[in-house]
Length: 494
Image (cartoon, rainbow, N blue to C red; front, side, top):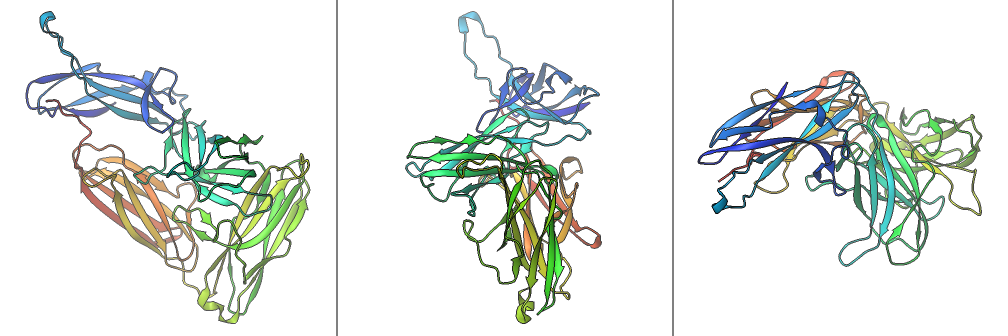
């Protein structure tokens, strides 16, 4: 049994309200809309029993109870849209009037306890050249083929030619600062701005979308730019995991004293059926607050003076393993510069199917190497801020943003969560951080975690955050922020 409160904020008389349970749809811009039965997201509309009409006096509220009957075989998440509308008053035949019927919609989500994988699929890609004041962009069409509502976060790598470091574009965010979300079975169009106009010729575009449990959805596109108009890219043959290359470790920490040298083995295996050409190159890197790695210069490499690799190019036969040896050399005066963060970028492409140097299926596998002094300080967690994001002054917050810093010299493996509740203790939502495996914060770096708050009714609320480092009870940090809603999701009739 569940319930929601409905308020009549009018000043006189009583009003009748009709309640409908609809399938939840989503247009290509991400706006939630009603959908025809069977045409929206995974629907729980048939499971819900709710009064079709309620009557509420002016200035009063009513708790509307509803029953939810969830099938035993249900798995994942299911959605519906509750639409509440003022019931029309029938006037006399000689005094016929047309009434405006204001309505509100409430999204209902039913989650089951059964685990279910996430899956976002990049479906299509368009290149939009600059037009007027609008910068050039890529229009990415993304479909959620999984069973959960998913945020769309990731990046797009654009290669002008094979072997070149790419130009990077990011997926956009809503005005609230939250990523766009796509419901199961729905498709979104995302405009991803570019820093410059693409030159004429063939470009390889690799779309990488982050999923839960540290997985990625990946798809390659071939983009032929030959003029000034809109260009549709040709999709690659495989939509995920183009290269069956497994790397033993994505993060390696090594202690090296000033004047010291260490060899760091990076082991990999070709689990596929085709020969893979692998190139390895060392570059500097930094971790963005979102947790994604970026490289200085984006489209050009930066020379390394302390990290080199033994093999820069080699071929790896199917079902065979190989080891790339990275050498870390710290100068005598290097103690003041530690910790240092570098990346060995393993770029792989299949050799099968290449004709006249055409593009092959490819992927990139970064291995982060953190070099620290043996006397370095332990990882140390600091909650730098917990703030609310509002679309504009005077409006309710739409998200809570937690900024966390690792002030130590070792990698911090972080877990915890953000809790959103009323001040009377009623829990509204919870966001787990590092529940599957700890989130990583590199030394002297920071991470940002965003929690959508959703529509708010009148009341007082509290956002609480608590984080800690795995294996260190003393490292736990907490913060909270209280606020009172300034608007209400209820509607007023006059």
